[in-house]
Image (tube, rainbow, N blue to C red; front, side):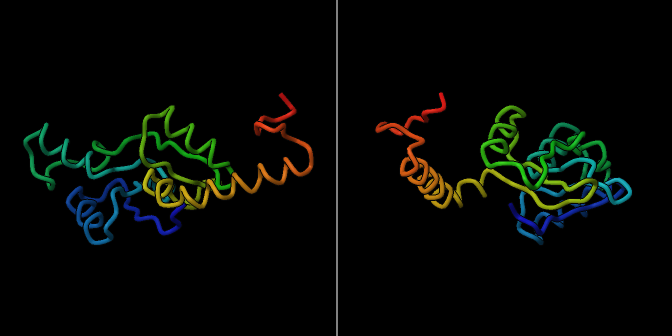
Length: 144
């Protein structure tokens, strides 16, 4: 999870949202409504909005482009649940919220960047369970 999340109020001009994407070298901006997470605008959203409408960024309201409601998970959710949620919702970016506060964002790039670390952790967990007798020789859980 990336904890430094770029945000903008839903009344912010779409041009400013695009500038924040570029300035911060990110692929999305979390859109807020009175400070609470509301939606998300991605690079693709901006490109599609200008292409489909034929209008300039200044002429397109951010709230019209933002994907709403924002799809979220809580910080304590497992990586498995995060991946499943992203697959089920067909999204590449998933907001992490703690109550009404932004805690971070998980992207498919985050999962790719940490894949090796995650597989090493899974291997360690399986080895620990195997040593305690929780798995058979093929690595299948005795619980099933």
